[in-house]
Image (tube, rainbow, N blue to C red; front, side):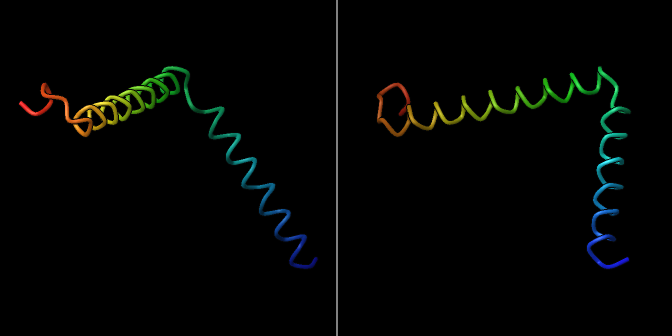
Length: 63
């Protein structure tokens, strides 16, 4: 067995572990992680919009 075979076996083992981990992830935890991710994206988007609003120099933002 050469190094290429060993790498192939290690990759297959890693793939199996990853699939097992995904299967073990319960649906509520998965949905919660998706919800948290969407909230993070929304928060980043709002922050970017506020930054653009302030940079535009609107009188309302300067108060």
